[in-house]
Image 1 (cartoon, helix red, strand yellow):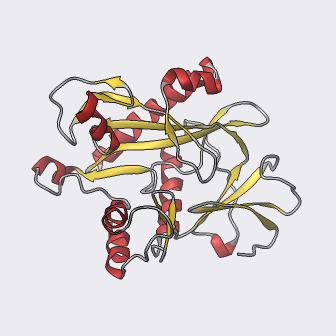
Image 2 (image 1 turned 45 degrees about the vertical axis):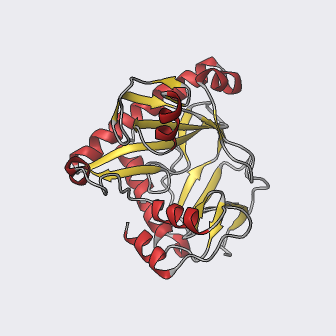
Length: 276
């Protein structure tokens, strides 16, 4: 897409990043235009067709959550994006992004549940015995991951490895800020009948001041697992149905070996994902 005054600097699985035409690189540009597409990815593959309205939803959710969390520094700037991408774009401050995905888990589910069944741990952290799939954890867990280069898989790492990557002070700030945001967001979600099971945050340093700022997206359907609190409390087979692209992951797992070119998504999978 051509946007007057902006040049495409990077195209990811879901988002496209633009910088002002007067700037030369994404790494040095003081401002960035983030545009969320309708593309959907699973297991590091971009799938086809796209999910209608997805980009607008992710942007709307991020903007809303940045507003709720305004006392935590973030990268959003009070600048309107170009009209062509007004509903899918955010103009943000260019940050020196840190190579750590800050995952916070409040419930035992997904890959955490799989590991717990084998070893009684989640990302190497020992948990009490007797927990079941979907149980609330005694305390939210900070389980960081190393952001691998494009095309490679992110890797779960320990807090000690996080210290090795970014230093002790920054690692502690990432952990403490992530947990604080998660607790705040969980309270807000629960007041509206939702459970925030887990999420991931990304942070960067302000290039001018060094301030740690929340970046990328925040608490969206692409970065977080939400459940309906009433459905969860009622139990049954649908208690862990999440408002995200799990339908796509499940279909792809059942219909491909997750290598090579993925098959086309059926129309009903696209429709059901958009509805979730």
